[in-house]
Image (tube, rainbow, N blue to C red; front, side):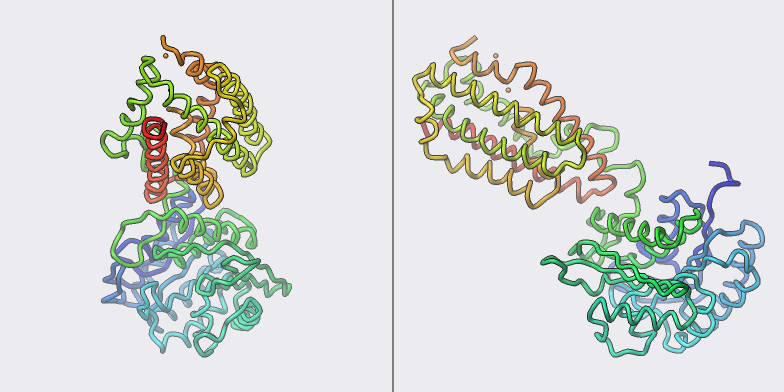
Amino acid sequence: MSSKTLPKAMTIAGSDSGGGAGIQADIKTLTSLHVYATSVITSVTSQNTLCVDGIHDIPAEFVAKQITAVLSDIGSDAIKIGMLSSAEIIKAVADTLTKFPEQSQHVVVDPVMISTSGSRLLAADAIKALVQDLLPITYVLTPNVPEAEILLDLTPGSIKSVMDMCDAAQRLANFGPKFILLKGGHLPLKVNGKEQVVDVMYNSLDGSWHEIANDYVDTRDTHGTGCTLSAALAGELAKGVPVEKACKNAIRYVKVAIAQTLGGIGAGHGPINHFHPLNWSPYEGKPLLEAIKETLPEGLWSDFIDHPFVRGIADGTLPLESFTYYLKQDYLYLQHYARAASLAAYKSGTMEDIGANAAIVVHIAKESQLHLDYCNRWGITKDDVLNSPESVFNSAYTRFVLDKGTSGDMLDLKAAMAPCLIGYEGNPYWDWICQYAADDYQQAVITGIAELEALGKHGISSSNSRFKEVCKIFEQATRLEVMFWEMGEKLC
């Protein structure tokens, strides 16, 4: 992309020494969205994930000098304004922007008043200046519920519903902004039986309303959400995206940034994940499956693939009673595994993915019939198989897989199914083993691994905590697979 077509956005905000909010969050956000970021620092803060313990304001005239320097040379397609901690700075920003009317058409104001950790960031005497000087030149105002209550001089807790939010947004528009995006992150609501965050967008130009609902994510790692959303919104506007779509895109950016948390940064409210749009992952340069195996406790994978039960099958020394007991349990297991594959087909979003998972169900159905035919050769009838009590090891394993499939996403389900898929040559049990060497089964393994890799690239992105979650699911499924082998040894 050439510099002539590269969208540019300027952020006017405070510096966060912890890197999760303010100027630092804005630049990360704009960069990840392929927007060139310029910056004007209004304050320097001393803060971390626990608190803000110091604010040093930049002199108002120097803030104005920074704005003039950027706009007179580099220019800007959109401007995001964040922390302005004094009336003098607010007036300086507003007055300077009016000198560059063509570059100040898309001003996004995030009225930063209270940090995620609860620290007050905006002096009380600055609110009047914000309302009188800055909001009249604002294109989109992005307050959260507590900030809206402060701006409207409402008692904290007054905004309790979507209807209250709509009313508040309309009243805020009277201060001058053309659009109000009132964020509902501080007010999760029950919608159709589950907790959701509802953001309200009000268009003062035509009086229209838009509600944008997303599932609520219960996490402490929300530092920088407001800064990030307003920066993402400014970035989308800088690209020429219409305001309604720009709001939706910015909200989606933050939703993913919260869901794919980085994890483990600081002891308080950790930052959200600004890296998720980038081609970077915690297992960069390796296949996901290989990276997951490397996280397993030492010896666990060899316990699985080199288990005495498996070796007993491979060299033909496994006692017949152990093998016949295992055959019965394995058929019962296949029924549940087919259910898991059916669930994967149900959760798929395209006909191609539905067909691929349905093909696994068809293969399992074929394999189960071969399984019964093989049982007959050892004197085990279908009734013997179906009337066998299901082992607690079998129940634990299959219910774990199905639970991950119902409570989690497709990546969770596939990670739980993976050990069985990728885990199995002269002996008495050779024909049974050959089922797992057949071309259709091997193709299912290849397809399953490719799907897991694709899901990882999309579902993990840059989230180290999400990667750890998937590793934990795979580890537990591997442990349960080992227990399944041990069942054949101990419960014959």
